[in-house]
Image (cartoon, rainbow, N blue to C red):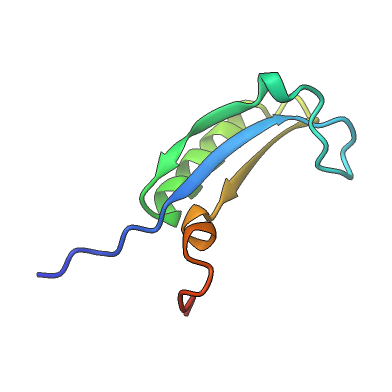
Length: 77
């Protein structure tokens, strides 16, 4: 049986200065949640972190496709 290809994803977040932009208020206070082996795992963690900060409209979390930065020429289909 073939193992699924590892596609690294980073989940991080922080407080933004304005709701319409992605400029962080304090880069020293970014919440680097972690690195995950696939999008679904990263999405689940992102969703939980975003939900836990729902009372702060300026707190935003993101999923970054690290595997695309490592190998940008790889077929994405």
